[in-house]
Length: 153
Image (cartoon, rainbow, N blue to C red; front, side):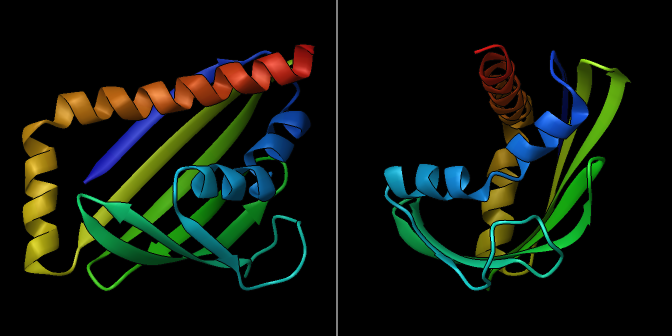
């Protein structure tokens, strides 16, 4: 199952890359929502090999995933692989400089179920694919708007 969204941001590509790789902010966001994040590697840089263990509650069950930065090409993008007992996923963030002060962000999330319960969960998402795709696009748009606002402010 794959979702893709794109948006344009009124900020230079280097600034946008810094926001995309601001892992501390994403970690705090997960914790505010009740999740638990443990960074397994030191440093704040977007370096290949940066790893996390993330625990969260979804659909009434405690879930645990491991995430790792597998590609980091400053300022063009980053790839994060996510694995769990039930599913594997990849998130690719590509950045394209449209001008000196405008950047296009393209986010692709792809997931593959490994177990029957995960396949059933993914099947239910497929039935509502348009709604899930719109929600994904909304998340990317909100992120783009936040980066816009940070750059201006």
